[in-house]
Image (tube, rainbow, N blue to C red):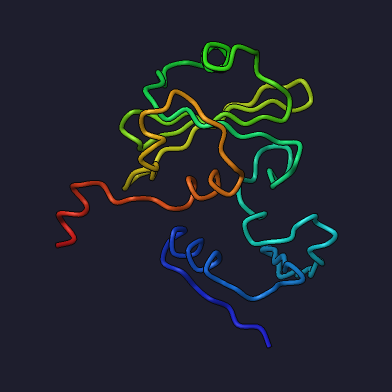
Length: 172
């Protein structure tokens, strides 16, 4: 039996997906013209619901022993392009941007972040901005220059948002 859940927004959908404790063995792709395909997760290299997150240009960005993730939570200038963010990586780490590493820069207001990564000799820069709320940082991360983070924390950063002070007051 298959039931379809409808959500009001993306945040509710992701919260529900990650709270699901049941094992899943396949993914159902439904196209606009009504075609449906059921694909086993083993064929897609997926083992958990979190592996479906972060669709970057060249396929899924999933937990891998080859990828490394770094967080830069303090005061990046978001007027920079790829070269400027590569300069930040060089300044903080002492080495240029490495293949299969993802660097996450968070704006001072915590409403915007940029993802910088390199694959196959190409540099990629993605920007994300929240319309409401803030990206949630841990206390020890707020004052750090840069720090390595696990893949699970990267996905948490992109999905768990904290209400802004203004929102929190209006909810009362």
